[in-house]
Image (tube, rainbow, N blue to C red; front, side, top):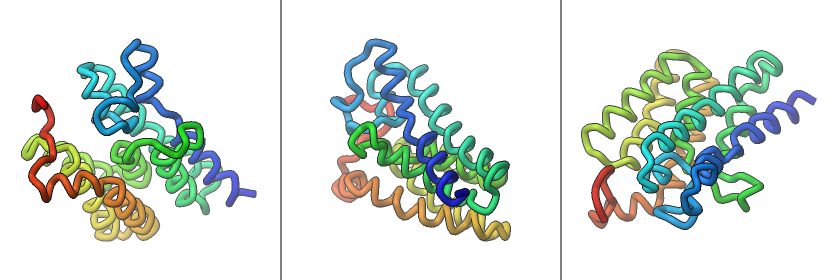
Length: 193
């Protein structure tokens, strides 16, 4: 049963739409009707509420971390399944008709759950690039690609495989952003439309 419980628990954790819940509690407009329509922290930031965006980022990170740590304690052979389940739950939540976020913050939590150096490399790449180029999608995609490479360099083969699969999905989730980057129309964080 472990092979069923681990991914289901991960999916259940990952599918909690913190961005949507927090913005609803704050009385802002439906998060899915603004910006990219996603439920992640970058779109929450478009509501103008930096505190809600920060809370969303931390909670989305926490659910990825929790999925890995809980699975490592209860179903260690299926930690990978819980990690992928958490990521899938965030990106494709059943309760929101499979329209969730892009998985960047949840991936950070998964990376930290596997090993703090992997999580640290992810965070440094994500925050560093965001500060440098001010384009959220670039920072998120680069961090997602760097994480499996760091895991591989550290000999964390399971983490490298899981994060490698996740990186491919993160890139797919950002396909519209990639098109805007090529066209030179991708917005920068803090810029006015």
